[in-house]
Image (tube, rainbow, N blue to C red):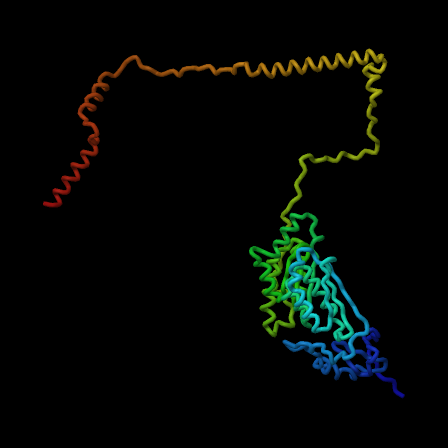
Length: 399
């Protein structure tokens, strides 16, 4: 028998599923069994590309009903959570509504005000195995100050919740409060913008941020909250979300990369480390150790104090104290006497005025005559002459 032609490319066993038949293709890759020809698979590549499943817009999964699990559950499950004291009054009011909402899914709810806890328990009539997890999330949201109207949405199939812990992300309390305030924005404007873009309800309370909404929105909310606590302002993420919202409307760009449209923000580290006042200069390295400093005994031997008696040492110490006191007294006295020492006055030297011995008598007489001829407040002669000339010109024009 003639041998079958084989493909020169190496056989890749990892890409071949166990159910692959000769000539069968899966997606973008082609798997050949030993002995199969490449031509056998070439015809199936186009079929595999066309048979890709695409989810239509607005498609929703069918709800889980009692018909899917008519016999119910065999075992009972329960979850409990504590709540703070300031939520006690609100939980008292809304607890009948909580019990009514959970009773539709055959889940029991208990409120213990003495212990300060909420408990949810599944029963034998409970048909949905995942409803107990949603009930657990419901009491968690109620404990984190989320109102009942928003928390009860978690029981729906296409709604989930996310509780982000932000208390341990920032060490300093003042810095933590400032960054948490950025999520709220002035008069809650930033939080409102995030809710509109992500279609989620967001509640900032204490050391946690609670969000209720669709899965895609919760992913964005978590990323924005973590970025904000890591010192990235939420306005940058809001701008990117607005651009993505517009790009999603275009069907041609839906399956393309949006990196070229999104803004790229570089974080500028403007805070520089303050230089110390005293800069330590490194000394040159020497293999020899530094010389040993003289001890107290060595200093006493050098000064001769070591060989003195105890009485002589005391006498010398008293003399040293008296000399130091006398020097300090002299310094204080000099400092006080400085206030009584007059400052040095600058010597005054009058300026020499050049006075001529001869006076011009004729010039003085002419000045006196001009002063007598002038009336008080009268204009000078030059102005008078200009007025007379202007009057003459006007008369000539009239004639």
